[in-house]
Length: 497
Image 1: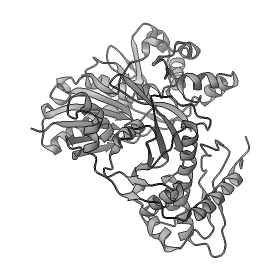
Image 2: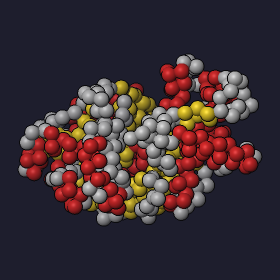
Image 3: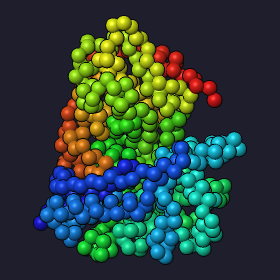
Image 4: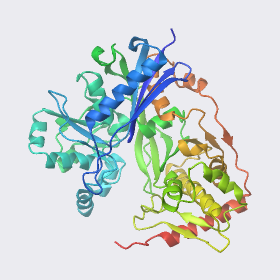
């Protein structure tokens, strides 16, 4: 019987499970959404038990749909929403609070104090990350400060903490394994990405007991086996990576300079920088891509805050479209954008501008402007912002990115993919398999258990996706991009601190 790999893809709004065969093809899949909790403005929480129950239910459903038993699965790979933080009781496995989600802003004031006290450069040097409530470290500190007796219990070894991968691994193995991988550890603000260890000075600064933290292991390797009572057999859990790093691996971005962009609500652009941790002068994140075969590889990461969300705004805010797919026909209905530029700074701007006070603006409106021009401008804004990030990456990493590999829901838009290639002046390759994040987790697990023999074997199983070649005149490309940059300048600083 051919070997199967089960990938558990635990996301921010849903849990998904996919069974893969040894040709890198989807055999079956199942998904379940779960509740989002907003106890206060800016706070976001998940119920850890619901994360576990939905993930377990989808795993069982995917196996049943594939018509296989748990014993037929060679390995399990986990990929997860990053930075979301869970704390639980070691003796019982009972969560001691709701998970604090990566989107949650409750520790903003704590971050501001750290920055005012001059610690920002220290954190960035050790962890590759800025001091921000996005990351796990200040979420951990908040839990230890706010839950009565938690820090004392943590020092006694009665409490365990982890990101979502660690929580799932603990439950899958019946409480026998408390571990994470390099990629998830590198998103905590507590991990020294150069020494590859929890940073004792940072732990002292945030007053986080080391005893609470998981063991950090390579992304591809056997972490433990599932308790037979969970799925019906003891299956090796053999691969773990945070969602964006897993997508980078699933896109087979194995070479230095290879890059991918996930087009979703926002965009996540990652470029492989090899065994060098490259510091960014543009505010990009230096992060660990993965650890395999005794070697750690790094990446630079840049986020576009609003990408597909701009199209959602056209639908839900302006009401000029009924569904996102309409934007392709609308954009192609007009010969150009009619001079309209949309800067979707609805929540400020990220790299390279980094201005939280910028706000969304539309420039170039005339009496001849139609909804088609506005729809086209919204799609173009995604490509402009991606170019902004790619240029920062090439400059900071000292590499040339020959092509951009694309995944995510918005890649279905042919106009966007072609305009992206035109704006970058290089090919954009759309993934043939939509579920690249889960595929990356499967690849990592399968490599550790002999399903695939190495990266060359993985490359043989990747089908070529659609390739979009740049076709725009270079002068026109630079004229449009210059107009975008002028529009951004005018959007900056709209709100005042």
